[in-house]
Length: 450
Image (tube, rainbow, N blue to C red; front, side, top):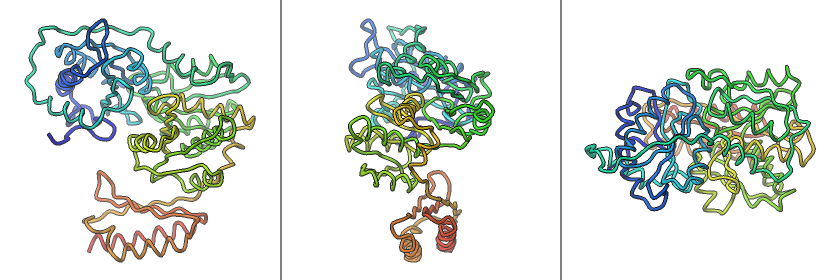
């Protein structure tokens, strides 16, 4: 059966539209129970089990109940975790030896959206062939199992995950003396992150910790960091940390209120590993990673490769290269030697290890990497077929690359959802970068609309 529902990051959409309905979730729970329940391993007292966690958006209650009913009807036991960060579900799935973990979340999207993400028994994303099997099973008639599953609530899930996060740092690691502002986006980290950083000794001011089901990611969190930037300055804090709604992304703010993105954070972690932890064997970024990041790693002889945009592709290349560090400029950072997926809290702690071990303020540490100007233009076209291979477009790109020499790059990337080609140019001179991007865009527009 052709893939209809699953994208690179699970199933996601507006609640009540398309696949995101209670009826679909009921059928999805049944299909997942039938497919995943047959997989080896994952026993609880001799029974098959799957865990369900969610973020704080109001529709999560409805979808949790629907998935639970479908899974139980398929004869699978269900462990209910309640509101928990996405990486916590990955960790707890491994801890409880469950067949799979299910996350009900739309990540950084507004509360009107929701979605589903699956983790395997190993805490990684499900292979494509398993998702295909689940989609095929959606067409099965729902029959009541002769051996219905049961549900149980895991009351200590939060405490388990807090200890896991703290254990990602060395014994005796302390944040004493650091004044930190946390923005939890009124999302899944609201009851987790403040405890982690306080228990490690930091003085913590927490914002975005009053979820009401409707305010997740609302003018707060990693997608809207202005509130955090203001709070850091008002509090006179050493730094600020922003998570997204499901806790798998993180961005920082330095004491000056300046935002620090995922590329800069990855560089700090890589630099720390090289100097203090015996070396960094390589880092995976994406096509959109800043060229300054690549140059800074090159200067330190740390290998760097780019993957397609999306944490799935980053992780695939990390595994292929045997590297333990990768991520995206959005702040989705994967430290594979600490956990199996992107984890905002764990990644933040790795950055703070660098701050503590280098004994430098965050704004000084980030200055070791110079971000290059980047300019992007979205070119809307009548058609995209053959545009990127057209001789005029190739000539425009080659001319721009010649002008940039080895101090910049050009990237043309089709949108996955719209009739657009994104033209991106990076280089040391912002005026030149903007001019070259405009020149290429003009050619692309002419070719694509002719």
